[in-house]
Length: 376
Image 1 (cartoon, rainbow, N blue to C red):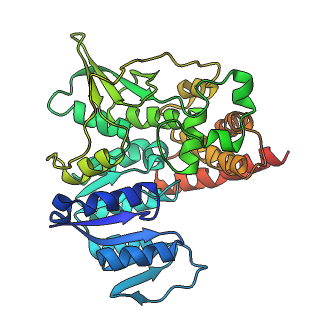
Image 2 (cartoon, one colour; image 1 turned 120 degrees about the vertical axis):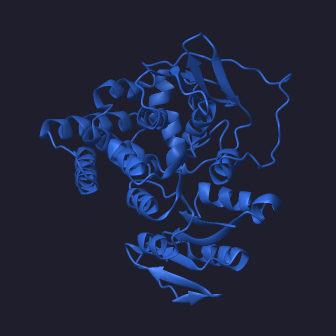
């Protein structure tokens, strides 16, 4: 039995991971030895009752928690996740913590786990080569959980001499809206995703295409290439494409279900999860060009790609802007402007990032700048 720790177990990815663990074959292969939450204690108690983990890490130090529940030790502190991973030393750590908070969890996982199943975008976007160098130095295995990067990872197995990576995007909830409708979109319309069921921030980021910009940056570091293209695939059945020098293109095709990449990250190199298979005779495979005037956030990519400070500013300011949008304090169109201005200010400061501490300082500064921009 492989031992698993899930960071962010009550989030969307965490809960879907539990669904995978309930399947007969994974129930016999994987033991959930620990997990973490921010503050969803009641949900966590039900998970403890079902899976009997040894440790629950709680990051929100303001909530009341017992020291133990049903035989599960509860650690509550700002570093509880890192402490739990170090104590348990699981074979696999699945990092599904949302936002920049997941960076420290990822690096703890790299230190104390053999495999890191990574669903935290910020760890790659903000830390880039710092993360990949650490992985390589310690000879650890990183398996991406994002559907697009999992697809690319699988397509490249045994055949890594590729020419181009093509990321597919659903286009989000606003893909058929005019630019005017796009800019004035309401929270309710933005959260109504046509394909995927995801958390609120990622659903907003899908509508603005920020999510695809982050995935573009991830692909740059994970697969060591700048030759990346984005296309629209409305039904999200094609999760990504790899183009080879001889003109061959490999597609990763399947239902848009996050349990597939989650399961593969746990069972790699085996493929053991059983799921629904689409009828290829009834599924349309069609791609569309991206409208860069509408999804103008993508125009920032050439400026920030490869610059950890600017990538961190991009991500941090988006987190703040999305938070304000969801609370109906700013318009949807302001998200791009807040990100652009924050990136410009961090660029002007010429702050270099060489270690995690630098990244976290830039992240905090970028959030402060974004809030100041909003308040003006």
